[in-house]
Length: 261
Image (cartoon, helix red, strand yellow):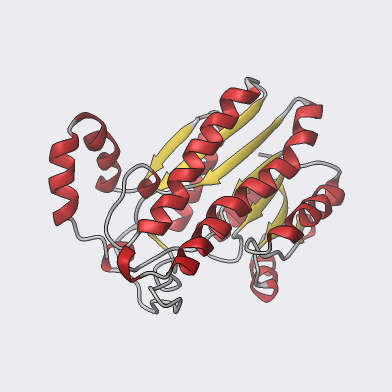
């Protein structure tokens, strides 16, 4: 990763923040983005090499501004080697209790924001015949569970879109990767949105006992370096992907009993 130009969204907290520290230590030149400019500068100040960390605040929900933000990011170094789409919001609400406008927010931020930024940087990658786009999805991008309906839908959409994009590009020099974390110990559940749009405010027990964010970041970086198409990260919950594929009826019974909060 030495001297690679990496743009990370969702960089002010959680997995995105952990990726900043790991990549900075590895010698990457970083552009870090999220809505919270103050938090981005906090993250920058914690980096070993602050000179190669550029702050670019953006709002994934403001779709009209994103192409301009992408142009601004490209202008900093002249190109982007790796775009890591780590920004997004999570959910803790039942489907029938969640307003349609709230469900639309999950798609706007988690799916469309990622698509718009990726399409904005791809032409330059294609012209240079090199580049990597990473989507930080989730294990619930592979299967659904309680309290995650809109969130799960937004992550499933990422898989359908970017798997199709990979096939359309048909270029071994343009790497498209989907990273699927399970329970990672971050503030994602504290900031998760309930049915009325307020934040949950507490950390789920499963998240509290999850994998450390820095370990998750290391595994994502390793998967990027190994040109993986898809990677599952976490504890025993990652077995759910294989269980659903090979034993769908058993998995359906199991997921109903599994504690997901």
